[in-house]
Length: 153
Image (tube, rainbow, N blue to C red; front, side, top):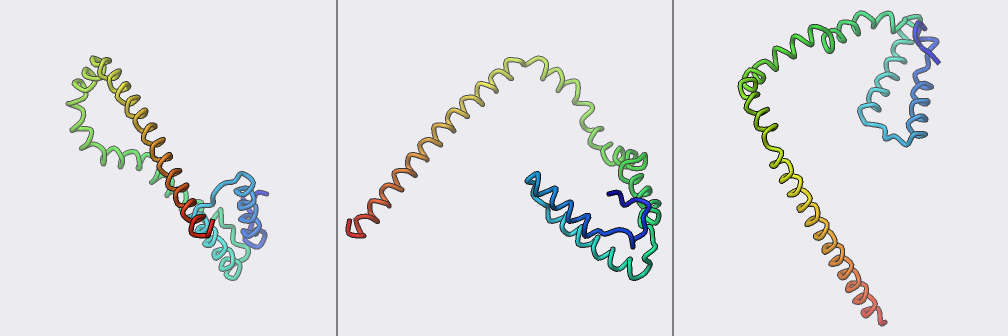
């Protein structure tokens, strides 16, 4: 049920959170600790808000703050800030770009060799996994036999 444009007295965050947990359980999702802390905070806000002003509309009150925050995170300000932060890295990489592209396009044999090496390593890892499993099985049999022998078998 929508909770927009409703005062605090008409909203039950407890029911909303209960539905959220039920949905997570239905889809076998693990609830992250950060979400639990957020939910705890929401319940505290609900209780405090109902004591201070039950007719408060959280959405109208929070809208200017959320809009400013979104602008700072994903708006033009964020884009400019991110570009300014990344500029030194790009300045160092751009001169190397033609050489890197030429090397990548000119070496299909190197890619094939890399694929072959990866396939060889994967096969070796599978062999080692089989050996480890066999050794583990043998150890389990030996321990079981020894336990049987000590038990008077």
